[in-house]
Image (cartoon, rainbow over all chains, first blue to last red):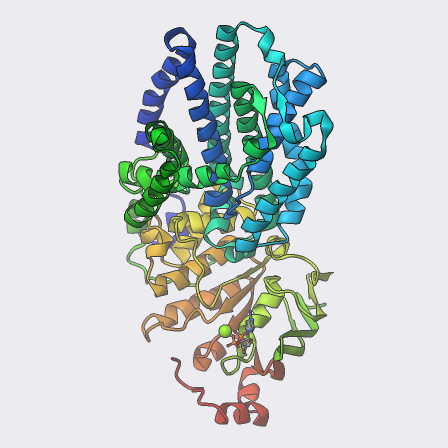
Length: 357
Length: 246
Ligand SMILES: Nc1ncnc2c1ncn2[C@@H]1O[C@H](COP(=O)(O)OP(=O)(O)O)[C@@H](O)[C@H]1O
Ligand SMILES: [Mg+2]
């Protein structure tokens, strides 16, 4: 049997897995239940869940950057701030409908992130990380100079206060739930696409990826812009939830620390990991809030322990190191061994027949 | 007819280390060029210059009559130049099949089913089919070298640059690989092959080039090159073993 003859057997590649269908079956009722939140949950609980939703979006975006794009940024708070201020400015000052203002703020963040990427991409590795932080500080300093944005003392979000509190909180809750679904779905579809395959290759070895035809810089720029937009989305959720935006808190580097924590304990380089990490982080935050500053120490220690004991994070443990995938992005060849058995009598390295028509 | 690859006055240094100095040569379409030279001669660097992994200091590279000196690695790959790395660079967290599919879809422009088929052909040709679902990080060195070859083949190259892919092969494993490379050349793919195993090289290549300290010492008929006084001097002056490979 020659290679040519065996090639008549069809090549089949599977993208979904059994566990992904099970996952969908589990996630759908959870989503429906969450969508009913405003009818079931108290206002305080809804507002808490909006914080959780924003953490999931932030973790998902940082994972996209670092876990898939290989870019360790500690400056994504720049975009959180742009999203928050953008929402307030567009809704309050320009008088545009707040629910339309959110996507507009996200687009503005995307537009700004493009020139910023040219600056940040001149640096690599540790310098890139520091550079992104410096850029975030510069954005903060600029905002603090702008009277129209409340300068150093910040702004209050007025547009939604016309609504009754119950209604406002419910709307913000639903908006945030939609934001989570969009962030996760976009990440998933991106990673399943050809572009996502390129990102994964770049993460593993950018030189080899480039030599195989992957446009490395362009791919990284796409990831950077999407992550900037996602963080702006989370920023506008935070502003709508708290009704107040202050430069010191919205541009705080603490957000980067939280994002890293979420991704590292959840499991880097998987879509599920940041979701699990955000839930764990959120629970810890609620639980440890009585410990004052000690809670940061405890979080730090936990992050170190988990990285040492579970390098693939909590999701790595749950999924048996990737055996279960709710969001499969890979390419599984169907029955490769059967195919192989047709030609296994051949020498291990081919016979010189036309190898690649 | 002009050559498929024309390299003119190519130079590259790292600080004081000269790795390419006025390197000039042609490779005609459908032929195979072997490259020999002591360790550190600049052989691997030359491949990196041709593929665009490294920028050159001066000189020009023309491929299919087009000046590609300023082009980046991905567009050179799409134009039809593929290479294997001497020290394999697999995508460790991706499966072997996915590794090869990256080459097929990005380098070769084969998307979806056509890409899967191109990847499978490359895996079958290199004897990696039984490992297709394994994470590439778990492969042993020999299979990593095969994966380098498979990924390069999957890009459907017109020019393939091979960097010591036979190193470490046993006497039994060598002939199939030599046959494979000869088959490639005979099917019309132009080959540039760096290898220390001179007898394997000369059994395939049409021309041989010897590099030392970044310079072309000799280029031409393989047996004449190996007999030329400059080449003999380089090999006598080093601990390099011409006959049998490492
Ligand atoms: N990125 C680099 N930076 C500095 N020096 C390098 C680099 N790459 C290669 N060199 C040097 O260039 C010379 C040629 O290396 P190389 O092309 O790998 O030789 P060969 O493949 O012929 O053994 C060596 O002296 C090596 O140390
Ligand atoms: Mg070398």
